[in-house]
Amino acid sequence: MPKVDPNYRPLRVAFDGDGKIRDERERRVVERAVKRWLWKDPIRAKRLPPLIELIEDQAAAEVLITWHTTLGMTDHEEYDETLGRRVTRPAPVLGETDTARDGSRPCLVRLSREIFKEMPLNPVWAVTHELGHAMGLGHQPGGVMVDRAGRHYTGIDYMDRERAASNRLEGVVGYLGDDR
Image 1 (cartoon, rainbow, N blue to C red):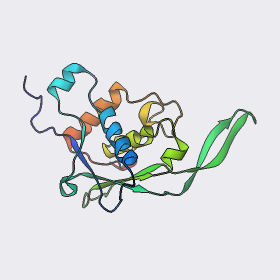
Image 2: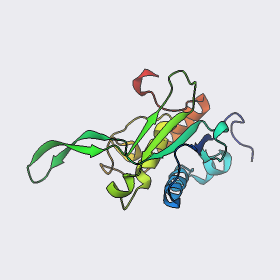
Image 3: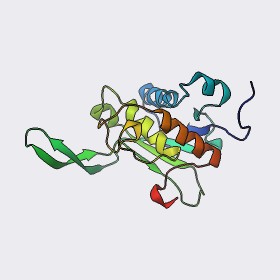
């Protein structure tokens, strides 16, 4: 069976040589995040290429991934059960996506090694989320694109993949917020 659209191709992602991988754990987390974006529907999996693929050639990549010791801190608002109210607390930035407005360079996904400390049971979540931004997805009230790690996280849903596929057909790389 032929592919649906010959112009459709996966988002090409590579590790940036400047953001050296310290250990294989970093590579494995990114590989697992890429696999999470694969089509779950067997018909789409047969007829469509993957949404995203990890490649070795940095020059051909639309997205470059770099690992950093830290990306700094941000304020995080959450409900505190003990106090019975919402509070603001500092939290480490686990990942960020930097998109050039003019498309003059690849989209940069920066990942913090603090992922392994802050999310020891599921470090793949933050990487999956940042790859969603690289495919043009914004924050959602639930699912993988929720605005804070662990809050109503249910994984990638059908509509996340459909929006990402639509963005791929339009050639969207990265996320610029509401300015698109």
